[in-house]
Length: 320
Ligand SMILES: [Mg+2]
Image (cartoon, rainbow, N blue to C red; front, side):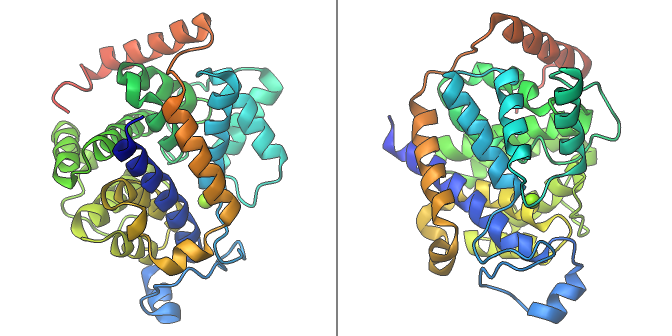
């Protein structure tokens, strides 16, 4: 295993969890309310509408852990295994669960349908927010990533915005982990928004909701605008809205570029130690496990879904 790559992947995972725990404090607040109550907050303190312990993570990090675990258990990727993992997670009575995620897992339980039908209402950030473990797993066989990403994402979110941005964020994280070069990530992001100007974050107006387009703009604005991991996460969290998810995704990109050591000491000490241990173990295992499908039928179906998306959009990764 390439130790430099492993370190960057671990930086992404731990900063993702740190962003989740840090941002959850100000989820659903407005920037004015946040400023009023905290000024500029630099400490990880928990609380928020979920009344969290300092360092406690939410559904974002938990879904990443369950997705990683399902791949490791199946010794490969299969949407059924991932869906079963999500059922197990929902039954563990998580502290929070998004409405589209809940509806998707319920549909799988009651109708045994693994992938959702397309829906204009499924443009939430839930499928993109858990992409991290799949990116790490697919690094060694990147051509398998798009179909697998759709296979995990569409369990809950089958929506054009959600699909396209999930894939773009995956590509950004891959490049961040492989190169450690922020400008290389900017090249990918710029190519993406040249193609999809509606997702442009260049004139950011404070969007920060759980709608994936808002989430993407918020994450990219702070990731490229700020120059330290700490300020990137503080920036996204200070916008409020879906602050745990925006901070987690921004943390993920920042962690790959700036590394674990850039996570402030107080956050490292406070972040749930079980989560840190679990993520560390899972990242190393995902990097080592050969990347493959475990069921030919699902490989064929997800490849067909990816083929159909490329037919509709044109060759998606061309020039990205
Ligand atoms: Mg959350």
